[in-house]
Image (cartoon, rainbow, N blue to C red; front, side, top):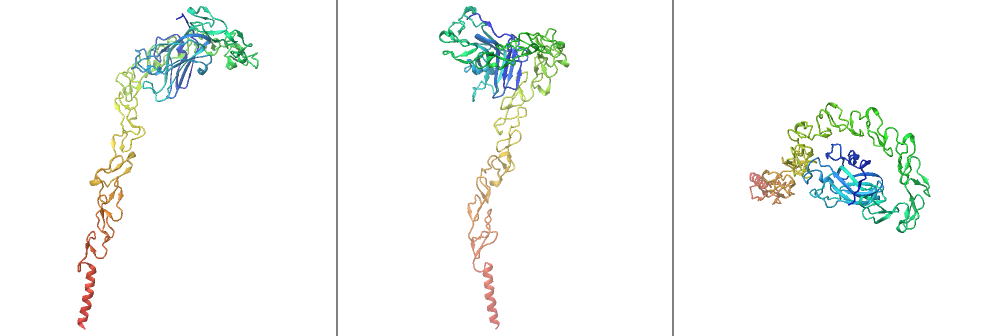
Length: 546
């Protein structure tokens, strides 16, 4: 491998993101990675949702010949292994090389499709033998269903990204010492032709394009203007404080409002007060007494105002005890942290310690354990995974929750209520009092011997009481039927057959008697016969007296 130089140390980095948290994108190219915690002042990080795209990129200033990319991930200053939380957020990442800020305009250098928590290493070196100006780190959740090791939400925790290669395009090989032809890109190690440089075309890239044009690689026709130029014939320099490709980039705050260089955006006479960098696009930090920062590197000559620290005074102090200012160099808090914060710079938040106790302000440990809904050993800073709740996440959500085993991580209360047939906040009790179904709102009854109905569907396990039938014993016997399951048939002579007992509530038809009107009458034993007898006897008596 050739002795290649670091191309991106201290060059401004931009984090392009669609996440809800962002912290110091430029810390991933500051040359420091001795403290690999999120709040140690040396790492860039972002955290997104289930559908977030996270993208970080570094601008090398111009097109460079790249050899490899070194990436060091956050590890919390602990051993990197599959049981820790950080490795899963590294899975599935990609590295692109592009001449624009759009990764789709460049080439895919690497995409992880094979690593697991157990096999991914930290740090990692990515071989990347391409030319480009921007190195782009990208991560996105894969298309569901995701592999088992992948996190439910995407995160990016970069402590250092170093890009190695030959700093001058015209050289390759050992020590980047072998001159390459001026008209084409060559392989950084072998020197083989990888395509024409802008401005050349034809066989062996030996012909020059029309001035200031990108031209067709074989025909030489103008396809567009080189960076810094515009117009039909590409003979006009960018104007109106613009520069670069298609004149789409805006100049920075150049001194006295001077226009920037039309090609690279540099400011020929330096920056206005409050800005720094070659292009004067970076703002000074919180320098002491409002002093201007250094126009090249942004450093504050007299230190920082209270509340800021670092070389450029851009990093805010943490939650120092009693509002004390932090050290303006390294951000340490001289008297420790306020309750709820911990770490050397007091930028890390305590977890949910038991009963709201403050954590240790040095290492974040909880003296009396965790409150309900969290775990993670002695720091209590990770929420219970789905399906668990309570202190140290020791309890399982009830399978009878509306969405099975989903509940409040602190109380166990089921999210969305209960499945049919269950009640209470944790869905641990069956419906009772002759109720069943969703929220126990449906009524039941009439089961045999007063047995309760089934708590889910209202069915009667041992059949129905007399007078009703059906799975739920909720249908009355039809006319002419009575008894258990309505199996018994009322007699034809019965009027108003009782569906429970079969008794004829409205009496019998003439000639019949009994509770169910199932006994035929005999002479003298019913009201009709007695009336006829009395009439006959009365007529006979009257005749006798004549």
